Structures are given as C-alpha cells and as structure tokens.
Length: 239
Image (tube, rainbow, N blue to C red; front, side):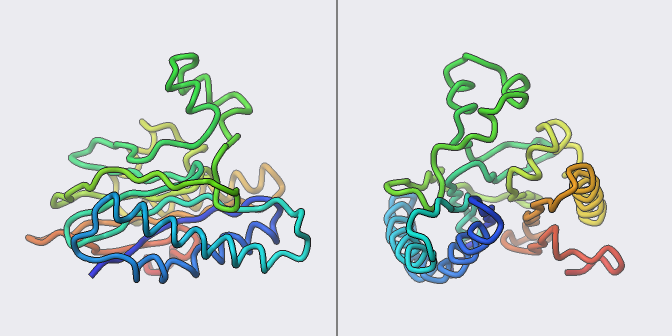
C-alpha cells in the first residue's frame, strides 16, 4: 500500500489560493491510485504529470475569470512501507530529522535558491531579499513540473516535517533542528505560538499549514503519527 502525505500553500489571493490548494489536495487520491509497492522515482514523475494535468483542468474550470493568476505550492512524500519518495513544486519543504541532524530533502523553486546554487549569495543574506519568496514554479503554472528526490529508506526514530514557507521563513535550519529534537507537544505549541505572534504583528492571517510525521518507535518503521499544526489541540495534545 502507498500513501501520500502533502502540504499546500495557496497563492493569488485568499479565495483563489484556497481553491487551488483545495483542488490539489482533493486530487491526491488520483495520485495514490497511480502508485504501487514497487514505485520508483521515474514512476512517480509520470504519475505526478498525470495528476497535474487533472489538477490544471479542474482549476481552469473552477475560476470565474480566465485571467486570474493563482496556484499553490506543494511538498509531499509517497510512503511505501519503510521507504519514502519526496516530491515538491514551489517553496514548501520536506525535512528529515535523523539522529538529531536536520536535512532538507527538497530544494526551493525560488530565485533566491538559484542564486545560492550559483554561489552568488549565502542563504542568510538571501532570506533578506525579495527573491527569497519569489518562486518560478508552482501548481497552476502551465508547463510547470514537479521535482522528485531519490527513494529514501527510513530508520527507527526518524522524523519527517513538511511545511510551507510560512513556517520555514520563521526559522533558520539550526533553529528548526533544535525545535524538532523536542517532544511533539512542544513542537506544536511553539509553532502555534510563533504563528499567532506573526499574524498579530502582521495584522493578518498566518498560513500555518504543516505536518509532523514520526516514524515507528518500535521494531517497525512507517507512519506512526501525522499531525497538522493548525489542527493540533493544545488542551489534550490530540488532533
């Protein structure tokens, strides 16, 4: 059995962005139907192209104004028993915490990341520029394509964290690494607290989509808990 876990971040205005992210999420069932236990990165790329074509068709039919520019970013993992295949479009991210060390499994489709890759700027300096949040690929753009990372085998105790730029913008990798080493309750509490603070300071709504996934804690590996930041209840620690 193959499962897909993903986060989305709508763009192009609140209403249009919500439509795009909703449709992208709803079509995930179609993506899962294209997968099988022996799915490779190449298989996933083909499945994502099919999924994206269906998404674009539905998005065009859902917009009242054909000239409306909207879309959504996406970051996800295909879970195949104890293995995963990360995929993404835009600047939402997938992180792996293993033995206390945080690794970003995705690479932002942003102008800033292009400059970082070319050695023109450091990540710390790039965060301060408009290019940091300027993406060149997103769901809703014609001829855009998903990126797919190599298949990764999970180890006992691994933690996966999927988030949108609303969260990754608040924390550097060292800060996020330290936070994700703590308990689930503390991670969710801190993320919600900082999200509320940011929203208050910005006098607006904060996009806090995110999911924390723990691998199995016993002799097996696989999905143990998937928790959404926005759905976590601090009163009882449950979704």
